[in-house]
Amino acid sequence: MGREVVARCGLAARGVLYVLVGVLALRVAFGDGGGKEADRQGALQELMEQPFGRVLVWAVGIGLVCMMLWRLSETVFGAAGPDGGKAGKRLASAARTVFYGVVAFSVLSFAAGSGGQRSSDEQSRDVTAKVMELPGGPWWVGAAGAAIAVGGVVIAVQAARRTFRKKLAMGRMSGEVRKAVEFLGVTGGVARGAVFAAAGAFIVYAAVRYDPAEAKGVDDTLRAFAQTPAGPWLLVVVAAGLMLFGLFSWAMAVWSRV
Image (cartoon, rainbow, N blue to C red):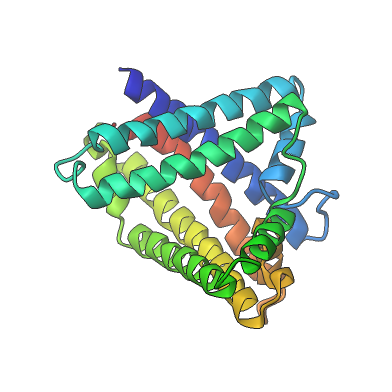
């Protein structure tokens, strides 16, 4: 029961962040960003401005701690499903544990007012610059960027193939609800994968150019979609997709097999 609770709380918190980032990206697309960046930092600022905002930010931070604990339990005991105990699955869960641990720390620091004030763009450039200074730095940066880009492609392909259905209790859904959840999973997953793939590509480009300034966080990556020949409409599509992924995360919080 404890594992199920932390998993559902974590998925709900993840959904909040994706919905808010999608909303902010949509504002950017229509030229009304409100001075907020379309990333986790901007989402937290938006949440803080709501009634009981600090309480809400704390709740999201605690939810992300739950997400980290869920992934940690999968690393130690294996994920749900017949192949959940395989080494590859455990390694992926370990990577997610570290990722959500970092995100949770950032959100809780923001809630406490003791940090977490830098945007994703600033963090991406700073980390890239520090790694560049190491022996073989550009190669490490390029490898990391390639891994993120490949991960984004995998996320998008898996979403398009609807592999997420194995993680959901589809039998508990009505036919209409099942169709809606599958739509959210496909469109949201593809959009999320596209953002990861683009961000990874920019990091690779920064390594090739030996210029940390070319690395982009979530905000700059999303804005880059608006600079394509499709103009702001591509950003609109991606922003809507991120919002849909947030809704899909909430659906997973209800129907996920844990």
